[in-house]
Length: 444
Image (cartoon, rainbow, N blue to C red):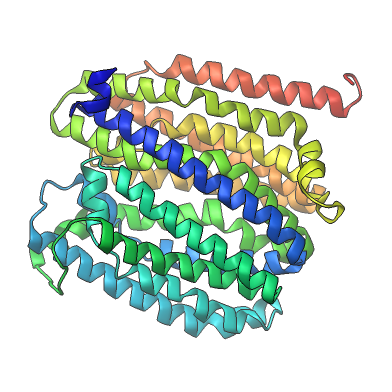
């Protein structure tokens, strides 16, 4: 145990980083849940629906312009100043362009959704993207070296500032602007804290051709992958109001917040710990270590599966306990989305394997399969069975992505992690089976 606490091996670094993320991001998710419970009592459901559209648009713009600067820095062998300054310059240009595009699109989007508030909200929310363009590349180099402690502290403090801003604003003026202000304040605070707490050279404008070419070569498939990822995972909140209306979108947004609580922590470990760890053992040409690392990660996150299982079995009761009666329609959506999250958690253990071996194209293919499986199913089931049918389609997309990912990573890892997948999926089937028997009245 002393070796894990003080050692510099890949296992020790990953262990300490995981502890930081579980503690830090677990606290952040608890803060988000607490603020969500407070804000749902201060604001009306339509405020959350409008903000869900703003968030989806912002995430879409960011993902449509993502060429993987962070993953490129983590995966690339270069860590000299010219390379990092070129990456920072590109990041700054991207952030500025995102804010401008968001401002230009604000009015057409407001007209399209019939929500005039969007015309003013989107340019303000876009300031978060502009701020993130100035973020220090030390965030990515620290992540590369698995120095997670200060990274976690930075994001935790940013979340505290965002949460405080939203709640104070909502108490003084209970409107959707409280949610928008919190997002911008949190983004600015996170950028400033990055410069204050992470040691690094002062970034400067630089455009080295070889560095930019290297970024684009690795990032071109990430660019396509993030576009597809947005369509497969984020576009649901843009499509939803056209099918069912803003009120139902508010319930769907709250259900999504709840189910993502634990998945966000698992994905943070996968992205900030396991991907750099996989990349390091790949650079060392140690295949056995790569296989062992994926297996250990899958076992380490196993306790987290209890939360989506609990939501499947007791989702409606949980909503009744946490929220006032206006939000009761969220319960059924929560149950179905929790099943999809369970499948995504199974997939998380190998999320960074393909990127670690330089196969960013594989990630794009997996997300494309998810989109192709999910989108027509969501529209078809949504039209036939309403919002619950739309939610059920998420399980179809998640399942298709899992099957595709395992086929692709088997060429790198072999089939060794397959047995763990079977166990975790059997737990899901058992939970769904018990829930079905309860709904049909066979079980009390």
